[in-house]
Image 1 (cartoon, rainbow, N blue to C red):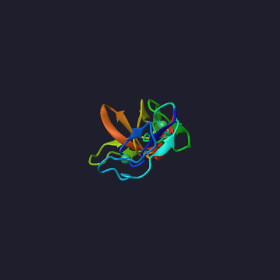
Image 2 (cartoon, rainbow, N blue to C red; image 1 turned 180 degrees about the horizontal axis):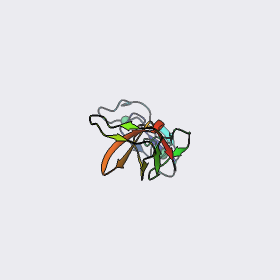
Image 3 (cartoon, rainbow, N blue to C red; image 1 turned 135 degrees about the horizontal axis):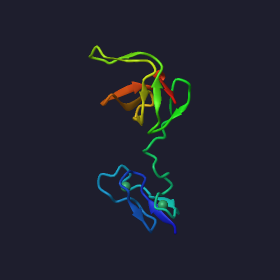
Image 4 (cartoon, helix red, strand yellow; image 1 turned 90 degrees about the vertical axis):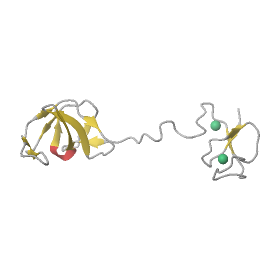
Length: 121
Ligand SMILES: [Zn+2]
Ligand SMILES: [Zn+2]
């Protein structure tokens, strides 16, 4: 059924055509837009905020949460003398907001690794 939505950010919805009357809305007193969605999303794709990140390893293989990877390079641990050796297997990586980095645990410590040094196994 047709309804009218405010696109000014107030989230206002009305069954009748009219203007937004919400104080502080950036579209206050502007006409609401006609919409006939049935899912309540008003034309906004659900999950729009969760940007679909594509994370790729050094070979261009897509990485997902929980993947196992190996290091393709000796990686010195910042702030310590420890080095993670090339060939070290890392189980169950976790993707981050940054497509160039993944969270993982190596030897019990949580570290962030750059995907360019990883290869999916
Ligand atoms: Zn509004
Ligand atoms: Zn709608």
